Amino acid sequence: MRKISTKIAFVLIAVISTSNAGANAATTKATPKPTVKATTKATPKATVAALPPIMVDPTTIKTLTITSKDTVVFTVADTAGWDALVSNQKVLSFDAGGSKGGATFNPSVKALKAGTSWVVLKKWDKLVSAIKITVL
Image (cartoon, rainbow, N blue to C red; front, side, top):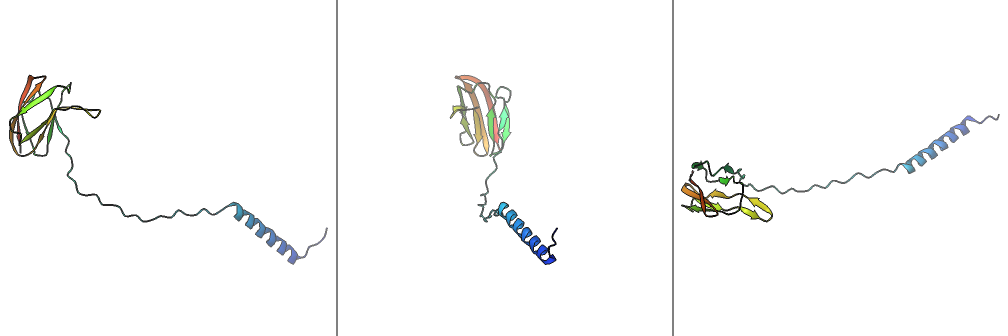
């Protein structure tokens, strides 16, 4: 076997190491880091929180006290054919419910301001209930 000088051996090792490092660098590409841009978020405007409706059976209730932000929904099996007479329309507003836009809604009254009003509920012109509602 031939002897290789120590200097030549070190040079060969350095060349082989460098060429391997270059090959590894070529195969493992550095992935660029995603850039993060600062965005300004719109601050939400203060809104009044919606209260859940008060659900009542119109055949069992005779009097009710609510606040001026409340809605009273009448729990009924069939939503078609409802009507109501409201004695004080400045205090309560009636919505007959029914099918609207593919959804079904129960009849309801919404409090408009403080006061007292009677709601006389009818289904297909037959008396169902008379409810005295006081709005605080």
